Image: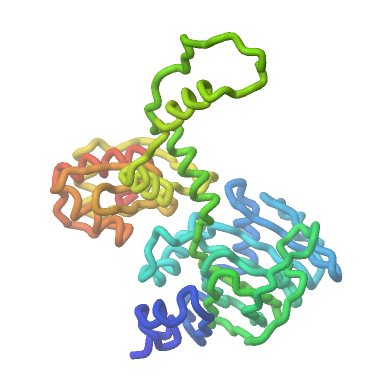
Length: 374
């Protein structure tokens, strides 16, 4: 049977031929998700205080951007054309959205960013632009025309509230109907225009820049360095050049700075903690009336358990990383924790070693996991 998700390609073929290389158009790829949400539902989400939403309007070549959360009256007098509502991280706001993201679990969770959903009436869009990450653009309701280009000129319009390409030269064009999907590699210029009232679902895969990654690593080192000592210069002599940084001062401070070393283990720990850290707006709610440890295990055996939508559980050969925190469980607990990390849930009636039960119960008390019966 042909894999409709990837236009007949297997995941291996797709990753070899297209991933970070060239676009792929897949007709009727995911028709079961075309009704994931409607204009009304997206507006309801945009009203939530925890939502990250933007309203983008175009008047000729002029663009305006408003940030949410919004009020109902913000949508009451909008024009019939030329605007777009964008809501980020819909996978944290809409439970069924996780089922859509699960279709892409052949790509590591460490690369997954979020599901962004947009609604636009006719002629709505965000202008020609490029993204710095891989994206799958799935058409929900309605139709959207996509123009794309592999151009190298990515100069942006000055002083625009959006990252709009100054010179966009499309080389290919498609109209996507409900269920169609377009994959685009990073930095591929594209412009999507609504041909009718339409919903577009964007599954994004993050790719941090070296600058951002190094910056966060140095922040990590601040909390993990053990530099000791205080600069001293007991042999200091009088000077006639008080503004000069003398070799004595330089060498003394260099010796102190040389303590700022890091190992491969430091870097691997940072990678795990960084990749598993949820977005800044995420807040975990511990259970109001927590089960006892024994009752938690019974509930998990009876109905299973699952990671809450915002939780990110990753692992490497040495440790597990839950929402930015490193955990090194006993060997007996690791197979079960790996299963939960990969499936994001645990089926009922699965044996739970005591060591794993202790860790899972701590995560339950923190609001990271929940019994399926909750």
